[in-house]
Image (cartoon, rainbow, N blue to C red; front, side, top):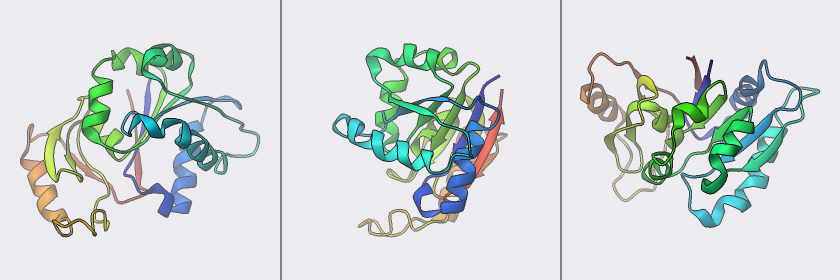
Length: 198
């Protein structure tokens, strides 16, 4: 069974929720879980630099006795990395960039019997459809989970954007009307997360 732990984004600003999220990821795993940290939603030039910071952010939240190891995902070895991992942890960034990379893989096979942790854009990836804060529009996700997803809900995300603040009620209504009307809209505030198992 695959466990998906979807977080909304903005986790750095929610210290207690960050701790709970990271502990949920390792709940039920062995004391030395292997993490693959995937930054496919960010520019290639940032991947190595982000590894140390993201690893430390996770380490500081671990329960006593849990000592994870970390490696940075690389497209050429990603399938093998996932096979050897306990946790595949996707960071946020640009939806389109992440989707570009992930459509190259058989992600259903990669994720089988793993813990898949996501935030912001990568949570959108798992959804059937989503509302992207960057483009302020609905788009299709990869359809792994039968949900519609809005990250950063009711936050000040984009507050310095020249387009002005996001109208969250409008975003919710747009996504509700988009695609399959039977799917639930999951709109999580920053730091909030949901767990799905399938």
